[in-house]
Image 1 (tube, one colour):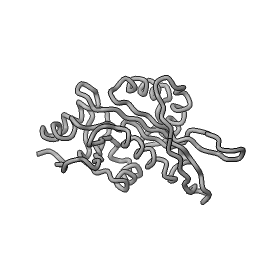
Image 2: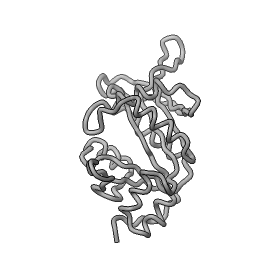
Image 3: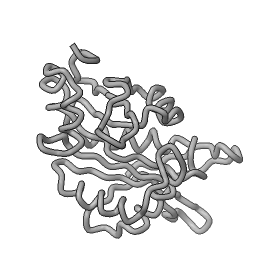
Image 4: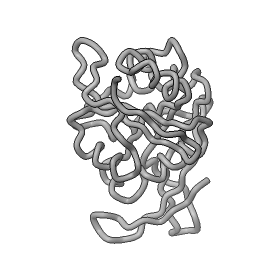
Amino acid sequence: MLTSRRPDASSGRQRAFTIMPFARYDDLAPIVAAWARSFAEPPNGPRLASDLEAQVIRHMQSPDFAGFVARAVTSEHGPQIGDILGMIYGYSNQPGEWWRERVAMAMATDQVTEILNHSYCLSELGVVPEARRMGIAEALVATLIAHQPHPYVLLSTRSDNRSGKAFYAATGWQILLPSMSFGWNYPPYDILLRTTEQSPPVHKGRV
């Protein structure tokens, strides 16, 4: 369990939070509620809590699933674990999965062999509005990466998600595939890549 104290961007006060894992037998309702609040506004929302719950339950069956939440820590009467401020989860990319197969179609053959086949999917990351710019997203990403087994981590974010892309660029992610299409009626998405210390050099774009 990771505990951190970061300044509140709106007030300048320190706000403590802790990172904790979640699993399929946990109560998902408060996690999904915070998740839905994180995606309540464009360009990434709004998203229905019922859809999000069904999605995470399905993804929990995937290989190497790992999920974490950031929870507030209060100290008024001694350390107390409080509200969920953010969440993240991911799983290993495996042949046959919807996301993985569509990304594979946009990649060059050597990218599939060298990167996608040895990668982890960061599927969802969200922080509630009042807890942003306090280091929570960065702490969640670092925790997930530390608990996954692959040399590469991939994610997709909308190409028009300027704030999200700025965060990822500032924390070590690079664009592997720009403006990718997941199919009819989907907006363009960028596929982002994060390498770990043991990762070999990466070839970007189609060849």
